[in-house]
Length: 304
Length: 256
Ligand SMILES: Cc1cc2nc3c(=O)[nH]c(=O)nc-3n(C[C@H](O)[C@H](O)[C@H](O)COP(=O)(O)OP(=O)(O)OC[C@H]3O[C@@H](n4cnc5c(N)ncnc54)[C@H](O)[C@@H]3O)c2cc1C
Ligand SMILES: Cc1cc2nc3c(=O)[nH]c(=O)nc-3n(C[C@H](O)[C@H](O)[C@H](O)COP(=O)(O)O)c2cc1C
Ligand code: FES
Image (tube, each protein chain N blue to C red):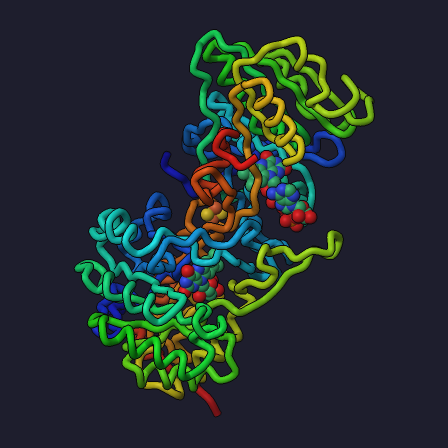
């Protein structure tokens, strides 16, 4: 008998599949297509301390086997989330996780503290790919010191499961992972989007309003797998792998590289039911390989 | 309205002119009810370049034959791939999406439906439903040249059809906003869909004349469900999603 139940820190999940922040709304947008409570975890939109209008249109460009986006964290702020959105999602019978972003450490801390008080939110995912406006706009997640500082500060006010989402736009992701582990993270998730760019050759203009944006979809999968593999050699906290997962085989590859759970992002746009199909496919794979749980294949890659 | 993820079977897929197709699809089950102006997201598989679904307006739903009609202009790989599909092929579709047009308030109102290029697509079903509900409707349809004027016989079932072409090959010469009917008739409401410059000039005509006006926008979309926030347009109350708050907006709420 295969059991897909998975634990990440204190977070207990029906299966190791989550939906990625920014690609699944608040979950409710997808409820017509399936029973969303059957997904292991739903990571809702990036939430910030204050309301953000996000970037101007155009915010999206299709690219070979993927897409670029520059949504720019449009959201109504944490207080609006607590008052108006939380009541509508708190009874969904799965792990509803909030993705937290900020422009300075104080913002992250204030936002995390407010979400800590919400009974039905068992975890947060800290998005450290955001630019630090007080320090010249360099993303927190691109230096060990920046990543360490923000995680350490949030850890002090947040006592549930703290997942830190790593940026792939760095030279040594394993070093960043080690510093967030040291700062008290319960798990890391990777990867966020890769910086990219697209151009309209005829009109000689960029396709995104912000010129550069974040690349996602199957085109980033090899980079994501490589990073999960490197991070799995560097830390002992659980890893949540994502980047370009379209089906169960892709998910299995992430487990083999060292991930304990995975997230589905851009694939939700092509098939809104991907998360549940991946859960079925993983079950089927484990049965075929005589395994009873995902943990048996985590990091089981055979090398040399 | 509940959204459905459906595998629909093509019953007919034919070229209309050189650059457009009319695709009709059906299902074993009854197609969901739709509001004119809503759209579908079509999944396109087996092409090397197309990754995301493609948003296409609902041209018509024939509830008697249980058929969905899509009027598609061939612009890139996705739409060209759709033109190669044959009767019997299956297409995965999410529908219905978006808000759709609203009905005029006064039963005796005369309304104008202005379409340009493939933007005429959603106006067919809108006209059919408005006529059914007793409204008097005129169509004003524009294209670059006569071969771009599509499905005119279908439109004539529901109202008087006035046309313009930029090269004068059919109807009056020029843009839709130059048509003489706009000086002769008085409308209680205008609906429009087409290229943005056309819709903007229809909107400024409506503002000048003090006529209520709804436009249907076509922003680039990723999810079509209001989940990703890629498709926003600026409104008087900040960014709104064209896919879920629209695609139809009253011009008084847009920053036009
Ligand atoms: C709500 C909505 C309803 C629509 N209804 C219809 C419809 O009923 N019939 C129809 O034919 N098309 C409709 N469109 C436009 C249609 O979605 C695009 O033409 C299609 O996605 C192009 O796909 P492609 O792969 O063929 O071309 P791509 O390779 O994606 O693009 C080819 C070229 O077309 C341009 N293009 C792509 N998308 C659009 C767009 N949305 N508007 C203008 N130019 C574009 C690109 O910039 C590029 O230059 C609608 C769009 C929206 C958002
Ligand atoms: C439209 C869009 C919006 C996103 N918004 C966020 C966000 O708010 N916070 C975040 O941490 N990641 C965000 N992401 C990144 C995804 O969660 C994910 O890390 C990335 O897309 C890679 O996974 P994928 O290839 O499976 O999509 C966004 C991605 C997309 C495509
Ligand atoms: S396309 Fe995703 S929100 Fe509109």
